[in-house]
Length: 177
Image (cartoon, rainbow, N blue to C red):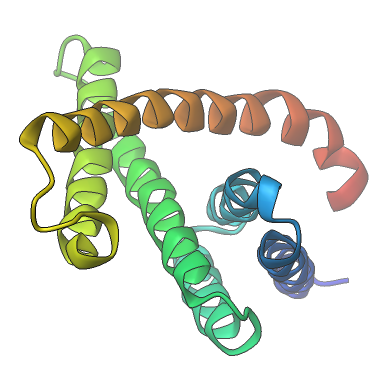
């Protein structure tokens, strides 16, 4: 099979698995966040294996297909935020990789990831303010929600790194042949 066709087929399979994870998140309520995170990890896999253009196309297709298929539209929005984080993190990795004169690239990479996450997270909180917070919600509670998001960022980022290095690294050869 031609290499381009193989990448397209692989992306289609991963899109199907992402949709299954998103739909299962609507069915199995206790594992929603885990399943949405698992679905978003495929954005990173397609980005790394197939390149930026196909990765962005995969991301957009997953959002559009999710909007049509998944009954809980809020889950599609959560998936979109998680996928956007992975998409921007990958672009940041490529950008910093080209900056050979920059010292402490790992520190800059972590700070950049943290900044990307907080821009997405805080804009999501601001956009859904009426759904999440009451008009009389104290600032202490809002700071607590922000702090909980920082813990989730750390866990999500570590889990994504583990999936890319360990899980995908081990099964990559079997899938790509």
